[in-house]
Image (tube, rainbow, N blue to C red; front, side, top):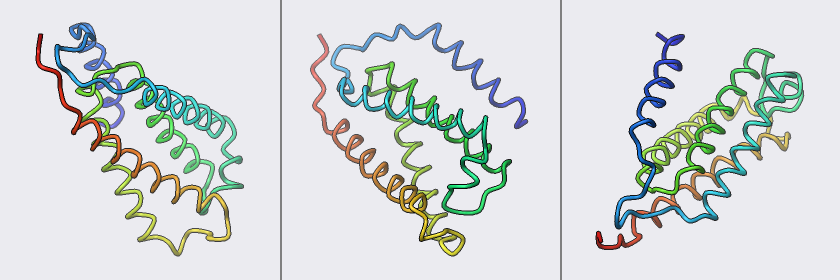
Length: 161
């Protein structure tokens, strides 16, 4: 199941894209271009970081905020790549209706990662700047996503033409 899921989901996404006109409906809220540009920058950074760690996991093993093996470093790189792909896909679509569920998913994921960090704080190296970068990055990301979500949900929709 786990081996097939990425391919099945990818195929389903591709099939759905063939039927999606990618044109905003009348009155649909649009994500500001600045937000889409920031999402694209995050995507590029995440994908580059994932690529570096996949190619050379020792970069993460030697610098991470908790103990990693080369395998766990590569697993984290795959999660990072997944986030990068998600932000890249979002950055290409201005429709809030396309963003809403993924933003909710990212918020849930960040909340669970923060709970995990709190729960396992004893395994973190609090003298390592990467530990604080990780925790502050997650908290900052959660705040930014919440602000975006609230802003977009409050944006008045224009009346259909």
